[in-house]
Image (cartoon, rainbow, N blue to C red; front, side):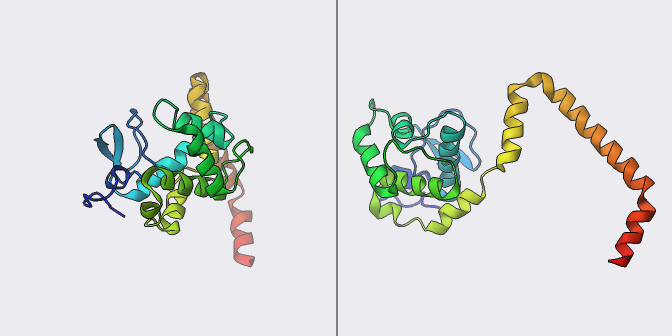
Length: 191
């Protein structure tokens, strides 16, 4: 949903960024620019997706596995009452502040909801349907593809050999399929 034309809404809603992600040079999918230092999105689903991806990366990539860890970075004391923020997110999610979290969909969805409530207020967070959060989670990259991509990015010397490996695999697959095409086709006809 696009909340950008509602001048009475809080900045995070008008930016379609209910998690109030700062403009930091990340080229978020669906981003349209920035406003007052925060990313603007074409619609709120992209803003929710960015928040969910940011949280997933904090847990899986940065090792921030508790609400205390995540919120201390997400909402640092230099800009926020971090302890109150942690207490509020903990109360809203039902997770203890120092409980170890995983980046599974229910956990990320709960964190997204709690953070949007903290950032734009309960009244405006309630305007965001749970279905929009689920849609945003469905837009996240496939974790296996993302982890392989991250591995190759952090190991550039393997990128060339990975490309060669894919080509070699496809060549072998074509040869095997050609060689056994009669048996494969025969099996297909009988099933």
